[in-house]
Length: 93
Image (cartoon, rainbow, N blue to C red; front, side):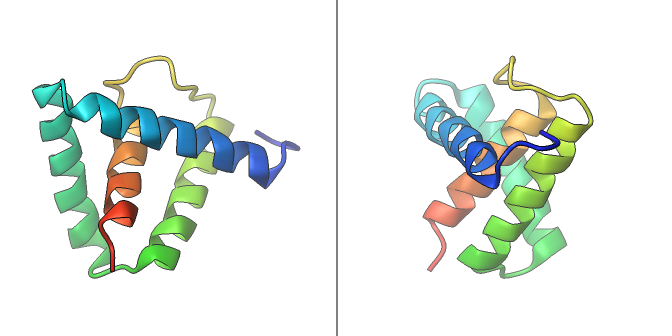
């Protein structure tokens, strides 16, 4: 996303998070994968608050897109990671 606006990246990430979280209800495998990512993120980031999670999410998504990743598969690692961070943000205090 070199040269693209942070707003465009934010909208993409929000769409992925919303769609992924909704898809979790009907897809136990996705829910389990998200749960594993959440556990890994908690180990990596500790008790991160919403702002820290948002900063992490932005850096992660920007790096992924700059590497050539694009959301084409709801089961790829990057997609699941983004959904996990979005889920954590929704459930943070």
